[in-house]
Length: 239
Image (cartoon, rainbow, N blue to C red):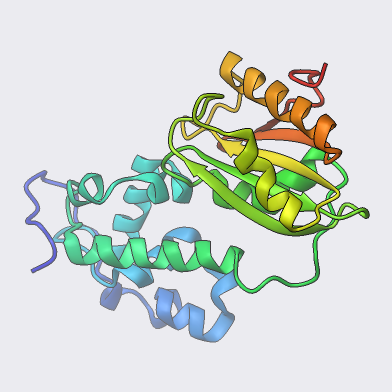
């Protein structure tokens, strides 16, 4: 069995089968479309079954509350999810697979080349995906002369500083792509996008190299959980 026994004395809640057909998530999705369902109802469809004394919708609501919504659920480890009452390896696998499909949809086959004219455009383009990454990643956006993004190059993963990020690697692919300019982006898994001294130092190093190579660094955007910071706007590293 995927579910763990109820040892917490939780109050009884009707099972999904006990609910009127019009209130069951699957039937609601079939008749009204997925957009009509709450996040908890969509998650309940993925989980399929609840646990003794707690139907699957209430189980989904508890998961979302404990982990702070879908972003927290996406960042939670396999083991952390398995520790939740009513959630075993099979359910965790279903959750992780569904969240990964959503993430891949964001970066599916590129459509018309997006144009970035502000840090907000950068955050809109990559923020949803980067904010869910479990560790730091450093990406480089290659732009043409009309500020259209021609490529998003994922360069580094892990703790970032000027010792680990090599300027030659930042610009190597940009030169090959004949990029007119670049924008650096990285995430803070803590959720706080406040630039560190190392972030500023790294930005200055890339900016100065770009001046020499005539492929300017237009900005360095740090993505947090629902927030972002532009080092260019703050005048950090672009002196």
